[in-house]
Each structure stands twice: as structure tokens, then as C-alpha cells.
Amino acid sequence: MDDPPGARALSEPIIPGGLNATLVLLRHGESTAIVEGRFQGQLDTPLSPVGRRQAALAAARLARPQATPALSIPAGPPVEIVHSPLARTTETATLVAAAAAASNGFGREVPLRPDPRFAEIAQGEWEGRFAAEIVERWGDVLEAWHRRPTETWAPGGESLAAVDARIRPALRDALDRLVPHQRPPSTESSRFVGGRHVPGGPWSIIVAHDGSFKVVLLTLLDLPLERFWVFPFAVCGITIVEFVDGVPRLRAHNLTEHLAPLLEERAREISEERERLGAL
Image (cartoon, rainbow, N blue to C red; front, side, top):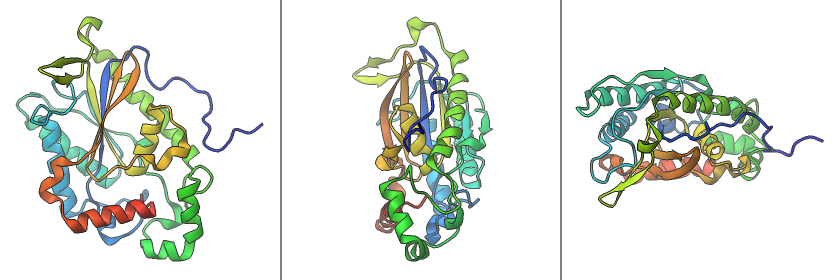
């Protein structure tokens, strides 16, 4: 009998047993396609001028995680910055790496590692088209994509099952690369210092996209793909997942306070409209 839509085939565990580490998810900054109101998917669009400023603010925040209010991130530099190879994510990741290298607390360059498996969900015939055109020509498909995302997707685009199949091994690789950097178990566990949570173990950053990150978080938290629309990811929003003895904990989701200097009413309207339409 065929598996129901959204079901995942049995495979190797994603999270290494006993892992004590932290994973930071950072969505890219605003792209030129977002400004123009286009669906982008895997269209290789660069950051807009505002997007570059957003990425710089996010980079500065991650380079100084202990600044008030402190982020729940281990002390010291990340092991690596993994990123989708698309232009908007590559530029964002490069800015984060530069800020990390310039930080007095890190003292070394952080390696950048592109991984195409973290690329955005391909949106087929919708890529590059204005949102209004998609609503007019494919309104019924768009509505079904919102209601039944495991059964319907953009014409010529990727199914969530296909995205899940590439995300899972990419995540496993990223987490496996943290294992050699763990310290002895007695020093790995999270703790509270002065009433503040301080995670233990190594950490890494992944810079990717709204759609691919939705699948990443569902995968880590062992939630069904049908819950695809549950987690929003704002441009340059920060999400933190901590692993304690191999068990994931969502410590923070979609933090955007570092973007306060750029928050404007129109920017919020654009973000809310894209979320409503399902533009990735």
C-alpha cells in the first residue's frame, strides 16, 4: 500500500545519538524579487539594498550573541556556516562570516560551505512571475497549495516529498560535522548562569530560505509535512535549535529585533502579503 501524502519513508536518524550542540537557522535578506512582488523559488535573485542592510544587522547580532538580550548560543565561533548556493543566501552568509571573523570573541575565520540541498523549493512556472498573475492564472492551485501542501504544488515545481528527500541528508551531514567538536560530557550540558540559559557544545549556522527552512524545522521536530505552513520565517529572522543528548529543543524562533532600525510599515505589509500568498 502506498504511503499517505506527507508520510516519510523510514531512513537513518537525522540527529546523532547523544548530540549536545546548537543549530542556528538564518533566512537570507530581502531580495530584488521580493521588492518587485515576484515569486522566486530557485530563481537566482540578489539581495536588494535593504536586504544587504538586513544581512549586515543579522551578521552583527550573531557575531555578538552575548549582547543584551543574549541569544541562546554557545560561546565561541560557530564550526561552520552552511548556506544555499543561491545569490541571496550566499551574500547573506558571506556577510555573517565577515562579521564573525571581525569579532574579537571569535579570533578566527569561520568556514563557509555551500550545500545545494538547502536551496529554496523550486516553484516551476511560478518563478519570476508577479503574485497578481499567479493569483489570476492559478488561483485554485495556489489555494490548494495552502490547504493541502503535500498534495498540491506549483506547476513544474517540487513536491514537499522531493524537498524532504534532499533536506534530510543535508541536515544529517550538518549535524554529523558538529560531533567531533563536542567536549567531554561533563562540560557539554546546558546550564543557567545568572538566570540566563547558556547552551553547551559546538554550534553551526545554516543560511537558507523560507520554504526549505519550514521543512528543516518540521524534520528536526519530527512533525508531519502537512504542517508546512505552521512556522513563518521572516527575512533575516533567527531561529535557534538546541540538541541535548540528541533531543531537539526549539529555544527561539523567528527573532527579528535586530532589524528594528529598518522596520517600516510598508516592509511589514510586504512580508504579510507574501506570507498570505505563499510566495517563497
